[in-house]
Amino acid sequence: MTASTIDSRDDLISYLHVAMALEHATIPPYLTAYYSIHSTTNSDAAHIIRVVAVEEMLHLTLVANVLNAIGGRPDLTRPGFVPSYPARLPDGEDDFTVDLRPLSPEAVETFCKIERPGRAPSADARLLRAPDGGRPVLAFSPTAEGMRFYSIGEFYAEIIEGLEKVAAGDPKLFSGDPALQVGPEYFYSGGGSVTVVSDLDSACRALRFIAAQGEGLDSGIHDADGELAHYYRFRQLQLGRYYQVGDDPDAPSGPPLGVSWDEVYPVKVSARLADFPAGSELARAARDFNAAYGAFLALLTRAFNGQPGLLQDAVCDMFRLRDGFNQLVRNPLPGSDGLHAAPTFEIPAAAGSDPGASRPAGGTARAVIR
Picture 1 (cartoon, rainbow, N blue to C red):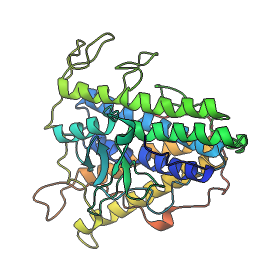
Picture 2 (picture 1 turned 90 degrees about the vertical axis):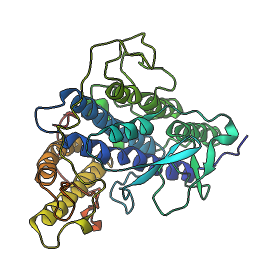
Picture 3 (picture 1 turned 60 degrees about the vertical axis):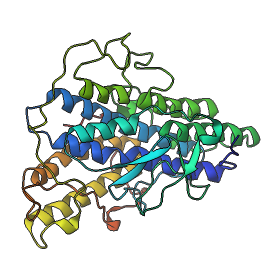
Picture 4 (picture 1 turned 180 degrees about the vertical axis):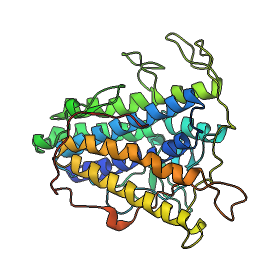
C-alpha cells in the first residue's frame, strides 16, 4: 500500500488549501458556459449549470470550515489560487484539460470528466506521476513532489485518511476558533447545507459530502435526499433526458431535455488579456471583470475568516458578475475570426484585501446565480 502523504497538521493544512483551489477552479468554466447562453434559451441546461456552480460554492465553504477547524486560514486571494486556463485535472490513468468554453458538447464532456466517479484500481494506484508541460495540475499532492491523484474522489479519500491518522496522535487537532465556522444560517444552496466542523466526525462528514455530491461515489445516482450527483446532472445534457429515481446510470427515463447548441455566443476558448486589442474598450471591460472577480474572492476570504455574514454580500457580488460577462460575450473579439470575447480570470495581485478588514455583516445568503 502506498505510504500516506499526510503526517501532520501542516500537511493537512497544505492539502486543504489545494482542496479550496480545486473546488473554486470549476466555477469559472461553469460560469463561462452558463453566461454564454443566449437570454431566454436553453433553460434546462442553464438551470443544471447554475445549480452545480452554486453547489461548488457550498463545497468551497465546507473545505473552509474544515481548514478553520484545524487552525488553518482560508485565503482565496493568494497568488496562484485561480489557475491559468486551460488547467489539468485527473481522469484515472490520464489527465485532461479544463478550458473556459461556451456551452457546447465539448464543454459538457469536460464537465462530465470533472465530476466523473473514479476509484483507483488499487491503493498503490491512488497517486500517479503528474504530467510535464507547464500547465497547472489540479488535485495534486502538496507533500509528494510531482504526484497527482487518480481522481478527485481519491484526493478527498487521502485527506480523510490523513485527518484520521493525525487526529489519532493529536487530540488537539481540532482546536480552531469556533467563531470562524460558517453555519447553515449563512448559506443555503438548495442541494445540501453547510456542516459546522468541530471534530473528526464532522470534518469527515463534510468532505465525504463533497465527494458524494460531485461524483456520487457512495450514494449512486441520487443521494439520500433524492439529489442527483453533479456527474449525472451533466450526463442528462448528453443523454437528452432527465433521470428518475431507480434509473440505470446510462438510461434516464424522465422527461426529455433539449439543448440548442446554436443559441450560444461563440466565445473564444480560454481567452487571455493578450488576445484583446491594446487600449480598447473591450480590453478595459476584461480587466474590469478580472478586478471585480478578485474583489469577489477577497470578500469570500473575509467571510471565511470571521465574518460569515459577508456571504450575503459575496452572493450579491456574484449576481453583478452577469453584467461584466454580458459586456464581453456579446461582442466579437477583433482578430479572432468572428469569435466573441469572454472573461479571462487573470486576477490582478492587488485584488486581494485584508481578511480582517471590517464590513457590516449581512444575513442569510441563498446562493443563486442569475
